Amino acid sequence: MTAILDSGIYSVAPEIYHQDPCPQPSLSGSVGIPLIHRSPRHAWWAHPRLNPNHVNEQSKRLDLGSAAHALVLGAGAKIEVIEAEDYRTNAAKGWRDKAYAEGRIPVLRHVYHDAVQMAEAAKVFFDAAIPSWTAGKPEQVLIWREGEVWCRGMVDWLTTDLLTVVDYKTTGLSANPADAERGLFDLNYHFKTAFYERGLNVLDPANTGRRRFLFVFQETEAPFECSLLRLSEGAMTIGRKQATYAIRRWQQCMGSREWPGYGTVEFCASTPPWIEKRWLEREMNDPFATGETHPGETMPVYSINGNKGF
Image (cartoon, rainbow, N blue to C red; front, side):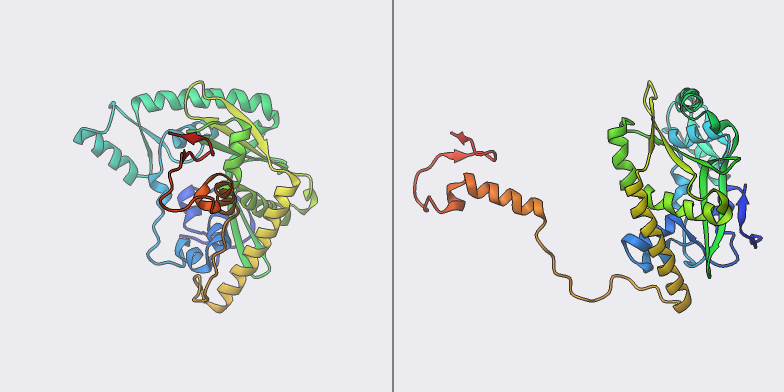
């Protein structure tokens, strides 16, 4: 693999990106998540160039969503349509495994039909909600430096003026904005977005503060509805603080070549607020908890909500 020596914006195959094509082991959004929320040891384990036993788990997460992603963006791995209804036969399993081995996305015939319908619906939504998206490129790789730290990121879609980034996500759940909102934070997109923002600001400083980062969520079940979300300034503020932390932590670990885990310091576990709230409610309704009833006394049975039962 040839290293990318300079900072810039590139179109490279996903497998090259995931191998880390920077001159030195670089910090990515995916590696930054365990660095922030777990430990440097977890970040080291997730890095393809630091961990000699690293395995890219993403290669086997290929399904309807991956196929739709490839069809909508026109990039990524090629789709291999498996002419079967399921994977019960040895022949179908063999075709699937061969596709995996050759870096393609295996999808059953009926799944491919759904993926095509999803892609058609998504493109209509994109055209209506983000007209500028057509003037752009898919899966753009950002390579930049933060002092001594090399950083990288891959965005789903970047407009040619470098002002709009679109992240296309599929979900087997609801794409209702109120539901998709939780997914943004559960998957740490506020951190990743702020991290990519830093990269674009380094590579294109003239447009700092002018960029839009948009998320399109699409359901994987008919009628394949989509929704459009963006992060609030408050969410971006937290993400920016996390990005700064991740870069500083990465620099320290790379310099010292030490990747500590959780450590051996004793941790004092405090009662979560919901546990305390539930018990206080119990004390209000359960005579045994309040001391009003003593062993051996006959008493009515109380349900969880405090109503008398028999």
